[in-house]
Amino acid sequence: MDTTSTTYKKDRLSHAIHNERAARHLYNNGNCEFADWTITTSFYSALNYAKHKIFPIADIREGKMVFCYTFEQYLVENDLEHSEKHGVVKNLIKKHCPAIRENYEQLMDMCWGARYVEYKRDPNEALHAIELLSLIRAICHTEMTKIEAKS
Image (cartoon, rainbow, N blue to C red):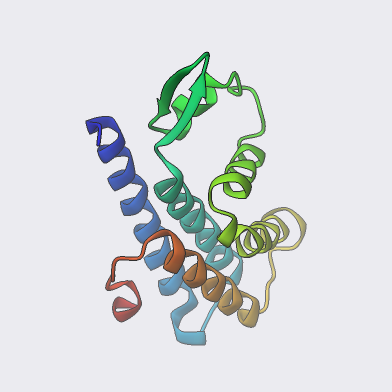
């Protein structure tokens, strides 16, 4: 695997784990004071797990195999730099990782609601966000991690 791709995958995984640990810390075993931020960090963890899983992407252009090693490179190569990036990720998930699509989109909707509609969220909704994230992680990062044990 290309060095850029390896570094990108490690960085996305590290960021996903960091955000998941933050979400679990904020949830605080049900004593959740910041359910909105638990939901938000769960979503951004899922976003990074998805990027970790999807990249690199191989594509055939003009009869040649072309690799996009990072999301940012994918945006440039496909003239999508000015596109709504969350929509691009949703399309990539639909095409390259459909097993997480429903959970990812539900978590994204929950995040948008918590950020832009009403920040006061029920701790049960925060728990549901963490559960969705766990399902996404199980597909995107199959190696055993110590995330749940640390929370």
